[in-house]
Amino acid sequence: MEIRWLEAFVVVAEELHFGRAAQRLHVAQSPLSQTIRRLEASIGADLFERNTRSVSLTPAGRALLPKAYRVIQDLALATDAARTASGAVHGTVRIGFSGAFNHLTLPVLARSIRRELPEIDLQLVSRVRTGDGVAKLRNGTLDLAFVGLPLVADDIDSRLIARTRLGAVVPIDHPLADAPSLVARQLADDDFLSMPVDGSSAMTEALLRCCIAAGFRPRITQEVTDPYIMLTLVAAGLGVTIAAEDLASIMPRGARWIPLDDAPLFMLHGIGWMADEQSSALRAVLRLSEAILPTPPD
Image (cartoon, helix red, strand yellow):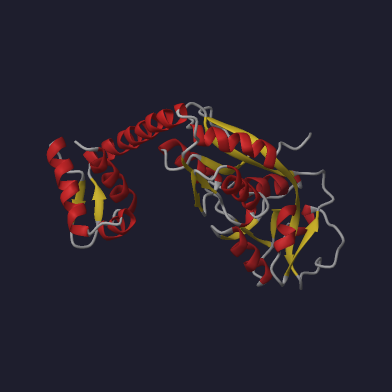
């Protein structure tokens, strides 16, 4: 068995499509299929169910996938350790972010990494909500993720990088659009837009916490996965939402962020990483992040 066979298996397992996997690997589809066949022959079991319309993992494939991630990660760590011994910081750091929520934090960190750590291959992965980030850190497809805090995950370390006050976002033709401030209870009869309510979004948890503290449960009529699209739908008049103040500077035309007079509630922004396994490249990025995105005072 060769490591490149496992690497090919992982990409096919992530894409569940041989054509897209071949594009990611920069190979033709036929050699990729042959590589998977060799791996299956080596193991003695089929790893994928294939037909003309879909590809799916077999029980053997599902059992192999987390182990394959681990083998690839262990090889990367071993390679990294050897490079570190030479005194240079090399390697890949994959950072997950959600989008608009990170418009103030991601650019400054990414620019600093490219400037201060030019030998590190920085890969940015978008549309990663807090729950997705935790899952991807655990399966080894991310090294660092922008997350909402607190995290309930003993195997993941995290650090606070920003604390921003929550406010209301309303359409400009909303009866309260010209108010200098308001209390959340005034929105109790409105339709709400939110990020997914499946537990994957810290922003949704903050919205619910804010409304429940004001004595009502919001009537969420639409969920969206992109934070800027959520603001855009508010601007279109489809409802209101609760969002952190750092989004006020990128509010689309037709929407307005208004501070809340309720007892202050905050969105806690952080970064998270696996507690037990850190490459020298990730350690260097974490050290740099402490200077670029310091933990705010209480």
